[in-house]
Structures are given as C-alpha cells and as structure tokens.
Length: 197
Length: 149
Picture 1 (cartoon, each protein chain N blue to C red):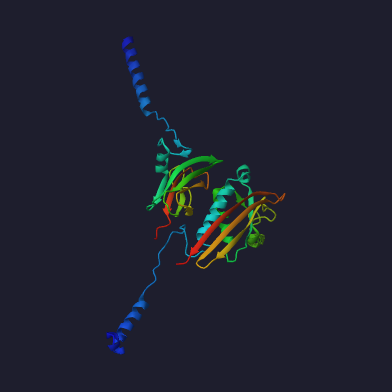
Picture 2 (tube, rainbow over the protein chains, first blue to last red):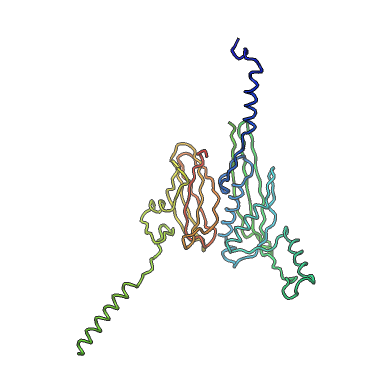
C-alpha cells in the first residue's frame, strides 16, 4: 500500500479546491507587438505575407517604365482573384498597394468599381437644391483611369505525416484600358512550412 | 600724408580680405561610396560602408552582410546587398530598410520585416528599392529569426 491510498478523500479536498481556484484566477497577458514583425503563428495567409506582397508589388511598379515615363498616370484597382483554398481578404492587399503607390506621389487613382456607388451618391447629393450650384461638384467631370490593376493569388498545399507545406503565388498586372496591352506585371512567391513537434 | 593714407587703405583692404576669407563657407560635397549616399562622411572601403549602413536588432550570429552597392533607378534609390550565412546549418533572418530623408529624418513608414532563408554556408543577393524619391538615405536592419522571443 502506498502512503497516498491511506489519505482520506476529504483531506484532499482543500488541495483540489485550491488548484481549481488558482487555475481560474490565472490571467491572460496582453501586450502590444510589432505590427510589421514576422508572424509565424500558423501557416495560413497572414500579416507578414500581406505586407511583403504589397511592398514588393509597389516597389516593382514604381520602378516600371509605365510609371517613370508617364506623368502621374491615372489607375484604377480591379479585383484580385483568390484562387487559394482559404479565405483571404484580397481587397486588403490591393488597398495596401494603392495606399503605398498614392503616398509615393507618382500615381493617381480613379474611383474603382467598389467605391463607385458612394461616388455617384455624393455627386447626386451635391446636385440637390440644398447645395449652392456654383460650388457643388458637377456631373460629367470625373476622370477615367488609363490603366487598371488586376491579379490573382494561388496556393499549393502539400501535407505529409508531420509536415505541411504551403506555397503562395501572388500575381499582379497593369493593363492599358485603351488598347488592352499589358504594360507591367510581377509576381511574389512565398513558401511556408510547418513541422510538427 | 598721401603715403600714410595709402598705407592705411592697404591695411584696411588686407583686413577686409582676411575677414571675408573667414566668413566664406565652402559647401561640403556629399560623399558617395559604392553608389551609396554617405552624407559628409568619407568612406574608403566596403567594410566601412557596411559598418555605417547595417545595424542589427539584437545579436545576429553567423550571418553577415558582405557586399553592398547602390544606384539611382530613375529618382529612386536602389540597394543591392549580399547576405552570407557562415554557419553549417540553415539560418533564418529577417531584414528591413529604414528610410531617411534629406534632413536626416524618417522618410517613410516602417518597412515590413522580410524573412530570408539561408542555406548552410551560402550567400543570397537581395535587392531593395526606396519607396519614394524623398527617401535619399537608408539603414539596413537585420534580425535573427532563429532566436525565440
């Protein structure tokens, strides 16, 4: 017989209660982190992937002939198709690209399809009798884009016993709306591997 | 009398000459090393250039920047650097550029950390481009990704 078996069950009760209470009182710790840091929590599409893609595409486009030769060309952002098996907010990627390009001061953006309704609503609102005619925005003065940005993101996922490998490929192209020529294109590849244990 | 006046005029002219010499400032020529902007600091070797441009966030062992070159691509600064893994194991590091403007101030938001996978005893050439023409100088920052934080 071990010494434990000789202890009465009731005598253990305070110890069990204390353990439960301690576990219940354990608090989660919240800290601010580096928003631009390398995030490797899972191998799913994450903030580092988004930031790397946006940065890589922006810098490449800024160095392209179409931007360096033209004087602040007007672009519009179209859809980036998500062809991966997971949910990715591709609008967030194109928003980051558009913001970086806009900040560089070398590109201008026309209203895209997603924001068109809001633009039209505002124009209509200003056309109402509530606004002073001479200072209200006029219908028929919007500037159309010369180029459109579109792309896609694909992934290949391979899984073995202890290893999961994810490969992402982000592709972005700039098309001339007038003549349908592709003026620029680039891609960014990312590989992430998770090993168990 | 004329002679005295002549001598005093000459002395005054000499004094003015000396004074103007003292106040005249020659603008410092901006230094460039391997195409990279160095401000007014002259740099005579690749090692000196790397020492002045590369920083680490914490300790980075075995991985070093060995070569660096810059050039202007249009009005944007382009930087090529070679990163070398001297270890006999695979190393993971991350890098980013801090962009500096003409006044020595931060020229752009923080770049994202970009992970680099380095095979054992290998070298990798990496290219970076400035986000805007206002970013005229830079610091390259390395971070060890194998360290647990």
